[in-house]
Length: 154
Image (cartoon, rainbow, N blue to C red; front, side):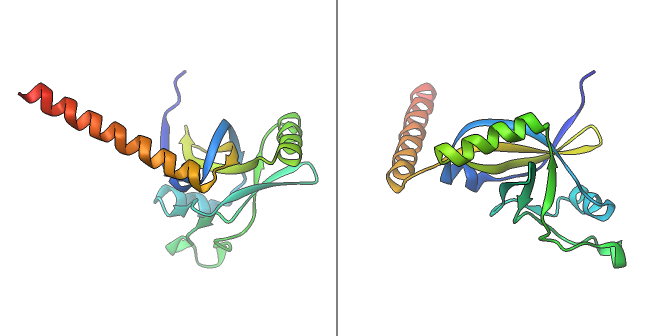
């Protein structure tokens, strides 16, 4: 059965600051008002990162705005939330992060069916010259595409 994927938020800054080596899906532990707020698209992944603590994976710095009709049931928007993955996968990621200087960064948040999922990326930091090189290649590709479009018109 094909479950519908509806993207809620993407972390575009992660692709600018890191090389994404691999990505995987994780569930996220949320309370009801947080899910309602996410359905309205009121979530920010910009400065979020993941950490492993006592064999469990957590997402830090993810901001989910309080739900307007939530009153006393609203939680802290910046609270640390647990990610749900198999223990074996978490320990493999933890080993890579400890040894090779990788970082775990949430790349996107989406609905898979009725469940909220997080795409976690195993990322390596970019240096300033890498960012400049990426910008130069993007600009060159844009110029080539523009030239090809002009060529086709004439």
